[in-house]
Image (cartoon, rainbow, N blue to C red; front, top):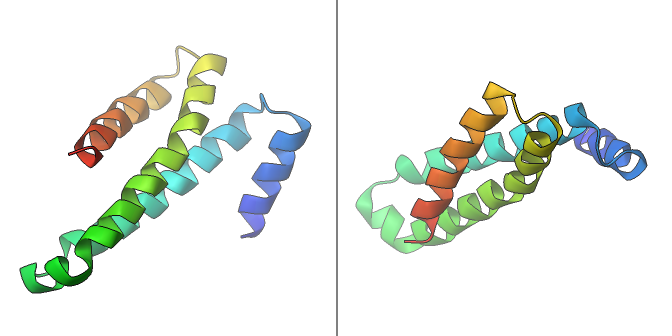
Length: 98
């Protein structure tokens, strides 16, 4: 929570702060991965009962990370880590649409 607050305040002052954008992107992405991991660990009966709602939450979390990765890409277009993360994220978001 403290880090989240710090990053958001930093972006209020400087929306082009690469580190704050990257850290927020990673924070939201990692939260989504953890949420998705819970869905993946469910048996079929549990998934049918509650999995879709949790899967939707994971997709929303992945989607929340995208603008921050996009901003990083616009600030440092040659950053390979950002490019790879964006490719993975776009693939995941495409699966979320199905």
